[in-house]
Image (cartoon, rainbow over all chains, first blue to last red; front, top):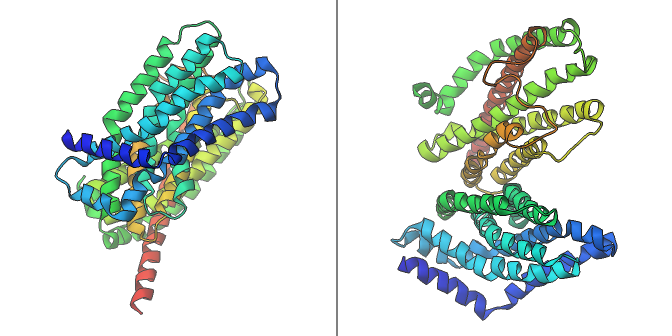
Amino acid sequence: MTAFAALFWRDLRLVLRRPGDVVVVLAFFVVATTLFPLGIGPEQNLLARIAGGVLWAAALFAALLSLERLFASDYDDGALDLLLLAPGALELAALAKCAAHWIVTGLPLALLAPLLGVTFGLDGRSLAAVALTLLVGTPTLSMIGGLAAALTLGARRSGALLALLALPLCVPTLIFGTGAIEAVATGEGFTVHIAILAALALMALATLPWAMAAALRQAGE
Amino acid sequence: MATLHFLANPARFRRFAQRVLPALSVATALAVAVGLYWALVIAPPDYQQGETVRIMFIHVPAATVAMGGYILLAVLGASLLVWRHPLAALMARATAPVGATFTAVGLITGSLWGRPMWGTYWVWDARLTSFLLLFFLFLGHIALSRAYDDPDRGDRAASILALVGAINVPVIKFSVDWWNTLHQPASIMRLGGPTIDPTILYPLLWMMFTFALLFVLLVLLRTDTEIDRRRLEAAELAA
């Protein structure tokens, strides 16, 4: 567990020393989201209807954009070889890196999304739903993306490949995330959607660290 | 299991394949001829759908075999990761493009069938979406296994992906039960027996058998070719 905490803080410190990396991801999120009102036109009803899907899809792209470097920098400078040799469980190490990734991308995206939702004309309950679904759903995206990042270490065109592998696996999370926002807009409760999102996150937590560790081991061979 | 381990040796597999392939080719050709005549000429038109029901004889077998193909891909991935069977990697490489093609056939025929029956080529319901994801998973497998300079790396990475993506197969199967879909619910593999009239059910089952034969034939043929290709590469390196 101490190894987990040590790796987690190390990754956070690395990001805090270069906060630009996080800012770029958030800026991408804002720019990508603002393209939709510009492209579709300023009609409020239409924008409020598509806001949930737009925010979720843009958050997904933003999270993927930052994932390419999740293991790649460790792979390039040899830190990954040390992690492979370290006595602790590699599954926990992979999870620690995903957790740190979530703190610096998933969490800020979930906090920023309601602000953007205001510009789409969402009401208070929908804004809360946007934030809550992203809070519960983005850990899953971090883990799925982490697996894709581990699988594509050292591959040709790894960035595009990462998106091709991760996006299909992220679709269930996206569907239930936007479904919850839609349910709130139509006056239904969104407890079921949040529960399914949480179930997806737990399922990812129970399986993906092992898949990530397996992928990292074969990358290190 | 014993046969599985026995065939894991590429040279042994090759002797096996070359004994089986000629007979299997003839059998598949005959099955296709019989099946097409049965499905397109003898089988009666549906009382509601008319002649368009004949699309089913291609659509259902292609989709079923595509899902079976993904299960095969996951099993091959597991046997590569667990036992490091050299043949599993070669066969997975051979399987993924065939599976992707069958999935594409399922998607295209379904779309052509949807136009006259549902009035639209495509809807975003759970069955169609999860089946489209199956296609993307096959594409991801193909891309990942060929993305490395060292083919072994690609094979192992792709086998992890195949295992993780296997979660999609039960989702496809049960999507028509879990969600309200435009796609009709299961009518063959269901509790209480099939709900299709025997005059249509039997040619359909025959076509499923035919497509399975065709799939196995293509996979064996491509695996055999893959072994040849590896030998050529090895010979070129040695020369």
